[in-house]
Image (cartoon, one colour):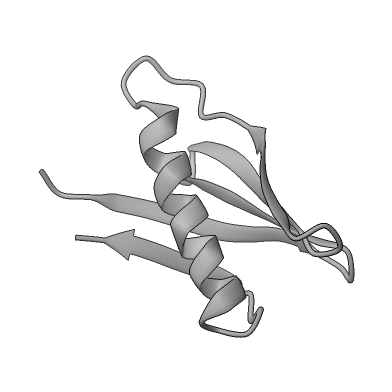
Length: 83
C-alpha cells in the first residue's frame, strides 16, 4: 500500500506552529507544536469514513518531530510523506 500525507503550514509565531495534514487538501486535520512547552498536540482530526485519522496523525507527528529535532526547528511551508 502506498503512503501519501500532505502537510501545509497554517500558522507560526514565537509560541507555536500549526500544520494541516491529510491525504489531500480537501480532507485535513490539524496538528500543533507548542514551542514553549515542547509538546505536539492534535488540534482537529480528519473527519472521514474512508481514511483513519490515526494513520495520518502519527505520520504527521513523526515528520513534525523530525523538523524539530533534526532540522533545528526549521518549519517548511509545505511537505509530504511518501513511501
